[in-house]
Image 1 (spheres, rainbow, N blue to C red):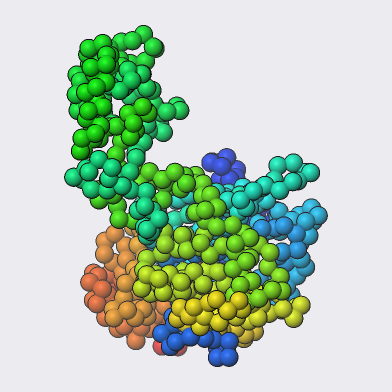
Image 2: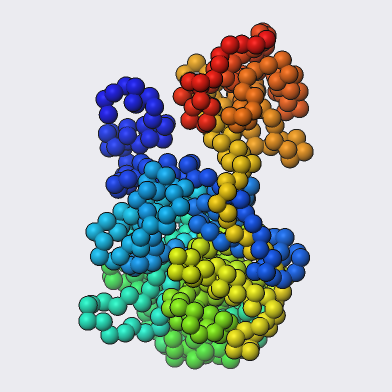
Length: 633
């Protein structure tokens, strides 16, 4: 695009993206329609929400906090504007693009408010990946905006769109904010598949709004976890279990032989690892078996080994076996019969009270720091897809039509890790309502007070509004214990059922437009070379927003915007000036005021005035071509 006029009309984000594409800076995700997909979220209009008491359930406290919203999730997210920046965790299971599991309307490329639901995208559609990405990109943008600075997004996916989803999330959240790629076992055993390798796992991509501010919690310990601990040697340190002396990472200086005082055998670190404790400490612990050790080069191509100072003999072995029948074995031991490899003790009282999520949950090392990275959960830890489907059938009965349901255990684990006890969980693709079930179950079991917001549209064109017939029904049955199989127990809680109306929510729309205008003004102010950088102000007096103050610059001078919608005053008047000076004083700012407005109707030395460009005003609904510009003073 070489036309300068056209370039000037483009948003800043689009110009930056064009520059990156031209210069080849970094790795960029590109797909047909991406530029339009980036802009869709800003053009979605919020809708009025109508409460339907007959589909709500539970106690008053639960109804005031938990919501199930029926409608398109993009419009619902826009309608939840007051929740923007307030969500602790988004936990969701979007369509996997398996064929006929999501719809796409080509009109949404230019008008996301078009009411036509579009056609189902089949597995044989040559543009299925592009359509899926155009469908997901604006939703991911809005999900990110909903999160607190400490918030986390955990999104389920399978191999079909794993890489595309990861690329979009890396771009939107930043690769540095990727917390984990969790690989969970959806089935316990592979089935015969003539097409090749059977997929037995699916994935959860976990991203932080800000990695440095996220806290990953420990999981609640169970009696089954503590059963692994005992005290066969009457250790005064209390209950302990076998620990691993080998670390998973290799270090040349910690890869050497250790000689057993029981058998004289030389032992090396397991696999490709190395010993996890300093050599001087290991030597001290070995000598507690009654014999002296020293370092010796044994010509094995590794650093000096820790071997017995005296040649191994039956006397050395007898001293070690004698110690084995006495109380309190040393920290490094060789099995209950002395014939095994060296291992350590892990004391129950010295580990964290919680169960720490580490690299592989089937073989937990509870005495190492939390570091998720690429994590694998076997089905015993996370449940299976078949478990999720069986759980749903037990609650609502057969005929629900859901064959792939996330197991409750999986959702419980994720919520425990990243949602505080009084936090909020949002699920924009609520499906059968497993996320809501998990929140209520955790509140019942642990006394927490987490809240949920579920969004589900169902397939109303088929007469299947399963936001009501399934999602709400499941959560109701969970609350009152009225399970189809008769084995449910009431766990309490409640929720309010709301449906999106076709009517636009004018008040929310005005808030959205004002915030977009603020973003535009701040970007303009910050990018001008002869002005100092601006910082958004997010705290206001008595939790009420300022009428005009939107930011301050490095000199503690306020930046003010006179715009509250196309039907309100957009001019800098004497009345506006008086309010601006009051807001500046309340915020502790200097008496130099940077004011953005459509027109300036007063003159005062302490004001630096900027006219909002006509193009911006037109974008936000003020038709400057038909408005009179005659100043009436």
